[in-house]
Amino acid sequence: MGVALLLISSGEAFSASVNAKGCIVCHAVRLDRNHSLACTTCHRGNDSTGEKSEAHANLIAQPAHPEAMAATCGPCHPRQVDGIGAASHFTLKNLVNLVRRAFGATTDLQSMVEIPESDSPRDALALADDLLRRRCLRCHLYYKGDDYPAVTHGTGCAACHLEFQNGRLASHAFLAAPGDRQCLSCHYGNRVGFDFHGRFEHDLNVEYRTPYTTKDEHFRPFGVEYHELAADIHQQRGLVCIDCHPGSQLMAAGKPGPSCADCHDADLLDKNLPDRVRKSGPGYIFLAGTERKQHTLPIMTDPAHATHGGKISCQVCHAQWSFADSGKHLLRSDYDEFDQWDRLTTQGSSEVTKLLENNIDFSKNEIIPAMKDKIYFRDRPGVWYKGYGMRRWETIFLEKNEKGEISVVRPLLDYFLSWQDGNGLVHIDSHPSEAGNNGLHRYTPHTTGKAGLFYRQRLENLHFAEAAKENKQGD
Image (cartoon, rainbow, N blue to C red; front, side):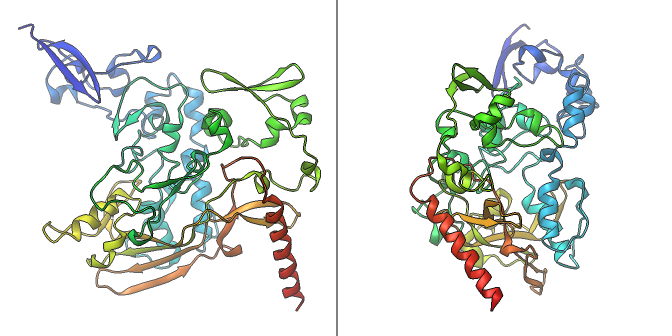
């Protein structure tokens, strides 16, 4: 017939004949120069037929998924695939073990996939494991992320190297260097990365959400509205996440993270130049982004930097603000009673929010209280609800360790876990985290700016607190 059809898939369009066979009959894609391959190279299947069931035989729908990446991405990228299997971004073992030890674990896991399953938690650790599998771990390479426009991403290699927009794959053109859009699809909410862009998530309770938002359905790219605070000076100057956190660090185990001194301490620069730093006359320049835009590097010259003998982290003075949410209450409820959640339907989880909005509307059929396991994607009983005692950013907490080193800490492990079964019986009631120091944990606020007026006051407050603690112990 030779009639041209316009076929649209994943936002990409092209013209094809109705007599055509193979993948392009139904799937329009634009490939980048380095990946101009036959569809079957990565997706397998059969491209010699126009019949759907035959074409999809042995199809790999997500070739970049962790379970497929070795066979599909590995032949061309063996070093990257071999290295990422042990990287913390892949295993999430640091986060997993931090939470599990706060609820009684005595041994560490090597990967998130080792977290035990439990429909009927016998103790607080088993409940914490269920929390991790179904509520917390929604940003990992096995899962496509929540159903929000700025959050949904690919799996495996595609999470960072393919672009998604409004919850859908925008292009098959691979990104050699992921942008902040890809990073923020996981690093959103009050987690590291969101602060880099000066964003602080609103409270969840409708009565404490300021400025007040409409109750009508509206655009929420990250699931919850956010305040616009001061962004990190590096972000203001046009730097992106991978300028300081390159793939060599993120895609392999044991690679150290960056330090401020690497780029701003003249003595260290004289000994070793980081990858993006160049000597320029008497000073140094930093090459930012894929365009390698030049930025003059400010060098530490203020006498204040020598005051504490190198035992104070840079952000103690240079952080403009920090996440200071406190009192994180998480309840797993298997009970089908939803009215009391009317003011907490915004939960930062698309799965929980959709269930609550549906079930408090008496005109709709009730959804059974269940959530998917985010590792094996099975529906399991119970829904995890979340609330905060307080959400703040003004106070920056400091801590001095046993070596006399001073750093910023944030309330990170101050969890309280509860479980109510399907009959409404409470088995575990606000079980507190066993983490020491009231749940405070070392943190590097990505809100760098000038030291300003109050850095001395922060240190004075720490010294007063330390003196009061010593006096109390002496009594």
